[in-house]
Every structure is written in structure tokens, then in C-alpha cells.
Amino acid sequence: MPVKPGFVPGLRAEVEATVDAGMQAAFDGRVIHPLYSTWSLVHHLEHAARRVLEPYLEPHEEGVGYAVEVRHLAPTPVGARVRAVAVLEAVEGNRVICRVEAYNDLEKIAEGRQVQVVLERDAFRRRIEALQQRLARQDSPAP
Image (cartoon, rainbow, N blue to C red; front, side):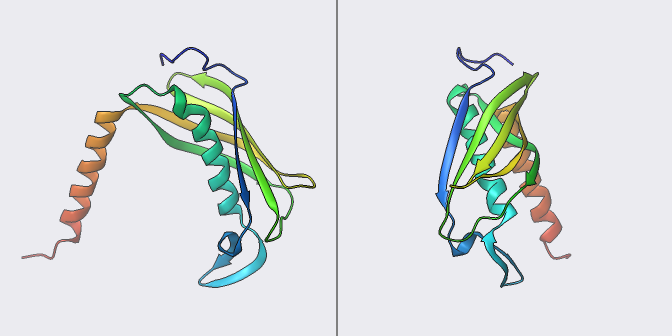
């Protein structure tokens, strides 16, 4: 994958958030734990990884999430601050691999890896349109 200068291992980006009620662990409309949910954690880690890649995408390229592996190590209550960090670890072909970690004000709360795949933007958009058409045909009532 040809990349713009500066896209090298060690490049990092961060996302900060304050845990709010909408980030709690909840299922079927009820809060399970009044704590920062794993799905919110993954969202912030992926956001940080996107910030690593996005400035280096060419106009004809698009980054797409491919894999996430995260260990949620410690709880964080509503009202606490979270900092998600992504560090470019490697580029393997069109795969961009970031080491990800998250912290609250007291400790590390998560660690893992996130992988994005860089695709040709127009081909990816055509694939999305084809998928949408297939799904629309499937949802259409039979004559």
C-alpha cells in the first residue's frame, strides 16, 4: 500500500470522552451495570485508530474496520474521563494494525489491537450499492 510520508510505526492518536449514561452497559433497555460498557470502549478505540489512518488516506482510498481484539481490564463509572490511544504498529499489505489502549484517571482499563483495511474508494462504494440492492430485492414482497 503506497502511503503518504510520515505513515510509520509509532504514529499515535487519541480520543477523550467523559462516560455518560448512554455509555453504560445496557441490554434490552435496561442498565446492567452503571459502568462504561465494552461496546463504548471499542467505539472509542476504533475512533482513535481511525484518527491514526485518516490523515494518510489518499482521495481514492477508504479505510474500513476489519478486526478488533480488546481486553477490558478495569471498570470506569459514569462521570469519569476516558482516554483511548491508538499507536500504528505495522502496515501489512493493505492492513493497518494499531495497538490500542484506554485509560481512566486512575489506571489502564483496556488493551488490544485494531485492524483497518485500506480499499479503493469507488470499488468499495460500488460494493455497498450492490449489497443495498440485493437487500432491497430480498425485502420486496413477492408478486
